[in-house]
Length: 169
Image 1 (cartoon, helix red, strand yellow):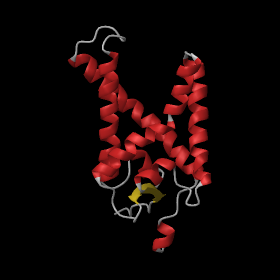
Image 2 (cartoon, rainbow, N blue to C red; image 1 turned 90 degrees about the vertical axis):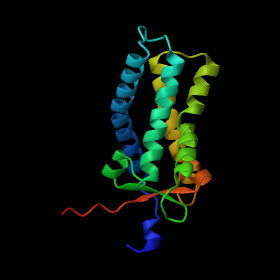
Image 3 (tube, one colour; image 1 turned 90 degrees about the horizontal axis):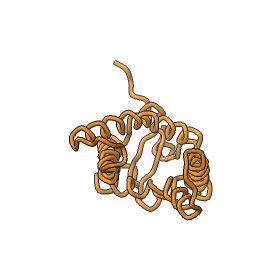
């Protein structure tokens, strides 16, 4: 593969499949972080200390993503789907840039959550519908860019590219 081909964005369907698989993996990470938080704070009710729990989970997810992205450019799901995060020049992503990408990647969810809040909608069904529609709408914005990258990648000067599978020994 020549260097120009190496910086081609993976197909959108592949990236969305990776997104879903990432969610499956993150379920376990969030459960362990939540259990550790509730045990250490002796939380007895799910709604007591909820802000602290959310802050801890936000931090754990940030460490997960920024750590993997700045050390090899791939989370566990990205390894499975052969997708790598690189800087705009094609090199490794520094930790500061990875943290910025993590923060901006919340744009996948924030518009939908804001819409739910402003509309006064609550419950699992409206939340699921709004978040699903928001994710697909945000992903579709990649088609407006000639390089087919997500908008938070453009701002952070990072790129998702196809990764070569590792050779087995």
